[in-house]
Every structure is written in structure tokens, then in C-alpha cells.
Length: 76
Ligand code: SF4
Image (cartoon, rainbow, N blue to C red; front, side):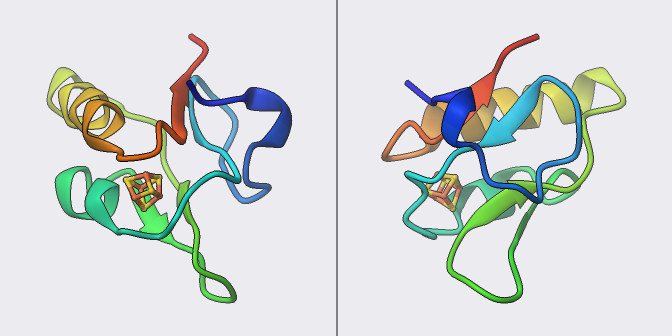
């Protein structure tokens, strides 16, 4: 389960976030490319835009379910 206390600093405010357990597999970026991207300076993903419609929300939920280390959270 993701921990909001160790979330990656680049996450934009809102319910979805990536925490420091991320191992940079890039799966979330592939599944929800409108919302997740890789950081430029280190091997971690972050939420650059919160979902704005049901399609993006579904993609974020799919990414959360697919993350191999449970580094994606939704505290909304
Ligand atoms: S799916 Fe999980 S481990 Fe992979 S890049 Fe995204 S947050 Fe990181």
C-alpha cells in the first residue's frame, strides 16, 4: 500500500500520487500517460496531472492496480 508520508515531491496536489517505493518500471506511464510521467533527474514516476474525466480516472486506477510495488496511492 502506498504511503502518502513518503510521496514523491513532484506529484501535483490531488488524490493520486506516487511514493518513494517506485522502482521506475514505467508501467504507470504506459497505462496512464495523460497523468503519470518519469522524473527527469532520477528513476521515479510521479503524477503530473490529476485525472479530469472518467477515462483518465479508470487509467489511473488501472495503473494503481498494475504497479508491482504498490507505490501508487489514491487518498481521495
Ligand atoms: S508502476 Fe509503480 S513502480 Fe512502476 S513506474 Fe509506476 S509507480 Fe513506479
